Image (tube, rainbow, N blue to C red):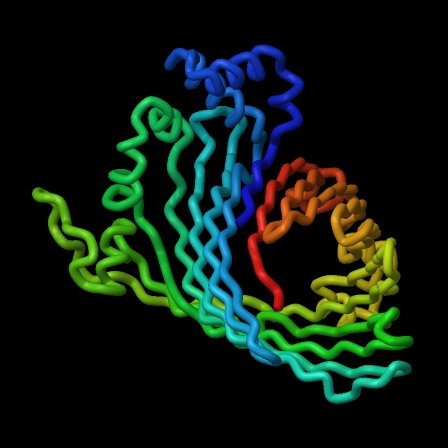
Length: 345
């Protein structure tokens, strides 16, 4: 499970905002302080696209070459077509995925290994219509209103797809050097349907799951449509020697490379655009207990650290990502806390 919060830098630099956070922690904050903090945070989002928070939850099981996984993600985006709180809209997104994967190592020698893998995902996505910033502020002192608003007052579109991922990995020198290529999101066509609220969506999946409140009529015919999402071509390289005490790992990934590969030899190809697709990372694990890492993701730095406990791993990371059209247009910071509980026999 992981929690990611965006746009913290400006808030942390504001002494008054941090004082309010302390009051919230010790449960002495007034309603006015809470509303003021929420208003200040939303105003910090600026114009255009942004993100507020993301929660990821997952459960996985590996049985030999087969892998099973269930993942749930809840994310809140923001969109501001102006420059004031009145023009900000918050857009909740919910993703649920059931994954079945198969991996086979068809060549396995000390000098050379070759692995093939594929996975199919049963995905259901739901996007809500934007909730106005002024409306969202009222949720601070009336949390019960959140469920009412999302279930019955906010239009939503939801739909399913069966995307497929496939990849090949070449290992050299006892898998010290790894080279891989993956094709992701093949068959990424989502069959969508619109609803007057999330309550109606849930009842369409299983009738009678949520009781419709009195006074609310069942909506009429909904709109059905398909959304095609493009597939991605990715390349990766890793240097990962398996030393006893110290385990360094260096990685380089070129992500979403399909269009760029198609433009090679054309006037539209620019080598400097590789920076927008390049992720670099370096990680060091000491005694399989403590891990430290640093990375450059599409032009922005990130840092992280993790501690391996008896049956759990606690991971913290902080980094930046671009929400604008070009690097430097709109960098947004994010802080992630991840806890992984597992047993590997």
